[in-house]
Length: 142
Image (cartoon, rainbow, N blue to C red; front, top):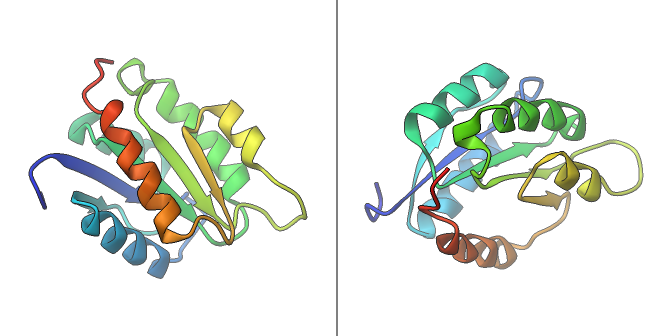
């Protein structure tokens, strides 16, 4: 761990094979003091759930740039939230979440995401602000 205090999992959805976004997020999280487990591209839902159950991260960051994040993301968050020990785990999704005009933010938050960062947002400072808000939730019994 970078500072011994916080752990993050970085992942894509099963249909997304992009990796540079994950490398960027890993570096950004490390700059904020997180040790990062980067699961890489095309992560099956069951693998993400398994890693969350084993590693007990403080936050999960899912990134998608293929335009299918809103579809795959809904399925992923259902799998995570179906595990009683992961129901309160902060999970965020961001990137290019769809190909149509409009926002997926409300839909994905209602599905169970803690926060949604759509294409073009947030600036790294905004994401950093979100990360700084997490210690209030870290360690909350599940």
